[in-house]
Image (cartoon, rainbow, N blue to C red; front, side, top):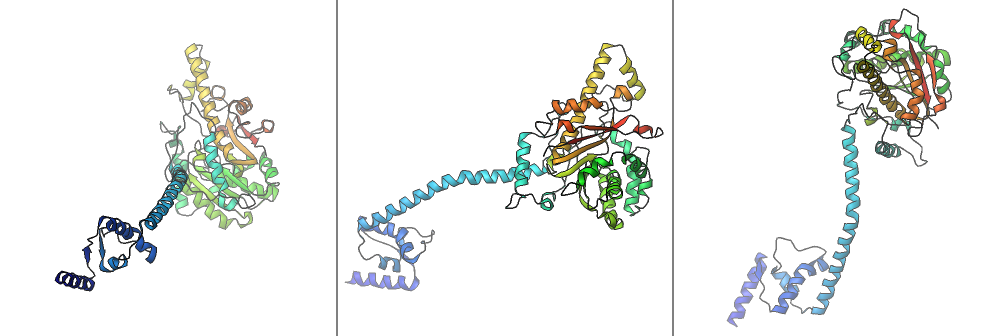
Length: 452
């Protein structure tokens, strides 16, 4: 009795302190209580026993709840039930986990691809790969409505890259050629002095935008005839410089076709020109209300790498005022025009072979530019490449490609089968400027249409 009284007194003290005491049970009771300590309380109270408490210990209250004999059969049923439920949960987890991991990987890749600026090998300048097209298609789908139609406003609200790589033709001080023009326009843009921009020489052409405007009037019908039948009016200029060539085209569309509401987009490699172009268009929106001009994205970007940040199949017209040349692509040391002419006319087989290889590199360079532009234009849209120079050994200067080359390029670079160009749509018009514009002699313009 004394022993029992002492135990009762100890029990009463543990009640007061709500403490924990070891349970002295036989083996069967010990097994039952261990399982009950893990399962029983959750069945009755809806909560698990704190993980900080060992299953071999319980409070006085827990001990009292377990004084009734629980049959081994009943506990086994509960235990087996939980085991089955746990197994099913693990099975479902293994099924769903790969899908979730795949989604996370896809999201991670999508984010990293936005920042990544893949470089291009000029010896393999082709076209958008199937993988790139797949990624782009995913992005387009994300901008569609329930009727599966693209929302243009959402789709064209893309992000300019924060960093770009070094362009293939950015070497040997090539872009210093534009330094004076860039500095002159940047200085005035900083002071918001835009009124005289259209009457000042630009782009190292030796002519003003208004003088070029008179020349562009000879092929403005390419732009006007297309936009008159277009539901939207988006124009993207590759290598836009300060944006003045596209602006005089927008003026011509208003003056000759009464077309307004053009939304202008573009890219430029020279950072200062990007700032000037954005400031100029912000100013022009306010000062030319009759144009109903809308400024889209004008980003710093490499024209041979546009599909890394610009939506594909997105614009009504994609154009460029000129494809920037690649100077001395074989590093022959013959950038000088006179020296180059001697190589072109030399009877040396080595020099003749070198000139043929150089022209192949220039061809690939033009193909790389054009492929990127074609990728951006929507089905039924047009690509316009202005002021193309003829091959270097024909006209000197930095050189370009022949008129005949474009039809060959459509086949060679699979612009027809891979990018949707209608080979029958190829059209060429001579630039035909007055002879005193030496920098524009022997140049021509090209237009191609992407099939609907």
